[in-house]
Length: 142
Length: 289
Image (cartoon, rainbow over all chains, first blue to last red; front, top):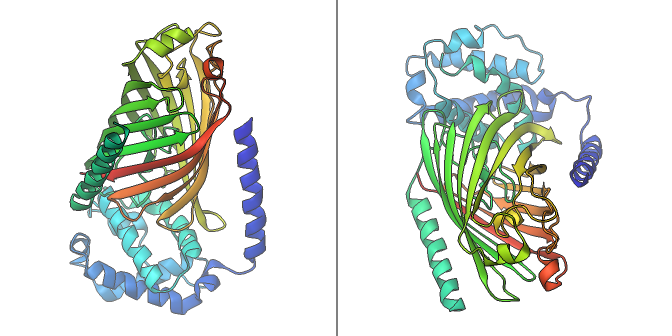
């Protein structure tokens, strides 16, 4: 089967390319630039939300300082950084907000902007998004 | 005649671009995750339908798309126009008009396609299992002479049914997002139906496997390849599997453009003695609402 050969060929190329570029010893936390990068991404994200007419209303009642602290901890834990998350679980945090699928994706776009502005490379952005994506089911339409 | 047809085409493409830029439809999906539009009008890659729906609508939105594709191979040109409506990221309805020009031998074959697709499960990006959709493409041939001359059993109309699986893996390919699609099509169409359905070699529907594999180099550029297994029903015209290698540019959620190298194998070797047909594929999808 032709397609099997293609898929296998591409797979081999990708895996060998990855092995070349990626040091498995280094955590995602260190690769993006550690604590400073987490802080920068979080600040940028908050600014993105503040200026977004669609998303800001979800946060209108939120305490910005608490959000900053908990988001930093959470992001840090997700990228295998040396932190502890002291906030509530995702379900409890988003309960009652009734976040739509569209607004969720719009917020993902804001986070991507925040990471881009913090000079996080595209490939590391995707790795971070891959860590966060499974939480969507606890965040939308709750 | 030919040049007026060309300038008309250019005009329509420009109009499509203008309207796409001015209108903003459902934009609830992440950029690039609506996919493209395939040659039979369904949301997909270029030659293969995907489980993703044609527009950027989320489950609370709907969207309207229009597209134009052209494949120029050695002895033929396929031009396609069409539009699609995608409802609540659940159901897709599409229409397409294909015009198949026999540029070397003269003559043309026109066909209409009406497509229907329903998403059964999942979200290509977020669910742990692939997104699954079931679909059908009802085709009616407007120019039946060539199909009949080649010995097709049916030259008026027929329907393809398909089951598609699509998954986006975030960061999987060295940190690049990887997308794959696998499609199972139940069909007896000869060259999409342009040469009718069934024939003296085989008249039964068969299960054909189609696949796509792509990598997003950044948020706006994707490269990849596709493969489409084809039936071979006519004694008079050998039919071979199709493949293409594509690059897509997705500047925003209003429009995308795809350039590909298409290898369509033999098309009418039986009647015209032509060899492998390959050439450029160009496709534009505009997201109108």
